Length: 610
Image (cartoon, rainbow, N blue to C red; front, side, top):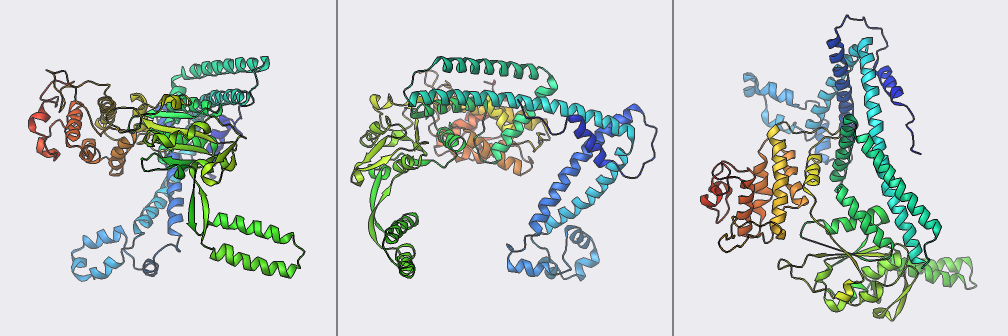
């Protein structure tokens, strides 16, 4: 059963109206139907604004009340009573007498670092009082309050149904995980599936089918569909702001497949092109499903087997090892028949010698692979195809081991390590092509892995994530001009095309380097517009208040960062094809080798669109 709200939608709206209704009875006005409707809408908007202002004031006061982390010079300045705020400065600057009579050198020292926050907080407090008065006036009109209540009840009912969609989706996800865990357990114990297992799996299949049917049924209501979509976008925004991978449908599907194989004890090898998100999804799996920071090996030709397994060090042992040695030594001492005073004396000596001072000695330091096995953590091998073949072959034996098995470390005197629950291996590598110089992985070695290609996000999902990065916490889009929204769509389309040219899936002989006569397609050598690059374009655009055209950020944050000159020319041509830079001249780009002819051949105003 789903967890119910503590309050039903009607109760929530009723309490909201009661909370905002003034204590004193307000004279009831004769209002037309349109005025009542408008009043209810105004009341809803004012309540939202009140919440925003209260949140801002709380946040500002938290910053302003933190005195300890401010520089001494700022603390001293704050004691001055004659501080100048923006209104004071504007009044003085507009006063001819003040311009000549005031000590502007002294005034400049009284413009304090936190005055912007103070001024905004002061204005917010004044606006809050105005809003509270307006809310009281509107809520005091019974007809307006009644319509507002009805609107809230309708909205909360829609909200509840959208929450149910989220619940059904979570049911499907959890059932998939439960089914995978059941199969993994049977596999680990080498137990044949029973009829009871088969019945459970059938029920799980039926549950998923029914839950999906309920989702489609709920989404058939346009209001519920819009609310569900808004909640999804807000969730994407939250994940984006936290720097997490955004869990779109295609990402969640890949997560499920990866986790299913890991639970069966099968190591996972994720292949993909530059910027497709291979490492990000591997790290996400470790954090979300295993709840730990994974051990990490970065593929390098300079790496050695000692870096992966264990190596001898000369020096002072790490603190945790010194603490372990101290505890072991004290355990031995406590076995001896010594007085309490003698034990305390030895304890102080050992603590000083082992913990505080330490001593130079030779000791073994476990590598990430051994630490992952000992501590029950996921191991991520990033760019595995960059590791020498001779080192990778040492993994062959380990990949067949299971939880509870023991493994001997040759580099540490054949020390035996028991593999703890939680250990698993996820490796990443690039799609084999001339773009990446990598080791050829042995077929027998690869047969031990479940391999999957991580592709760039579908265009629709990329567009949704970009929109989510620009909405506010309620799901309202912050863009003000329709052209900006169109530009986001064009940017998404251009990204998909650039990814296709980079991977070789798109044929384009008209770009720089292409040759139609010989049937040669142009190629991007090192530049691809990944999700990370897209964020780097829209972040500064949003931070600047969208006051500059998006194409300026496309140029500075992406095109001009291309390390290969030919790539920069090709990127400029592609963006021109998607109606960016429509009235630009070649010299406006500042790209070496980019001529007017190369630009005009791709500008829709000069040439046919692609």
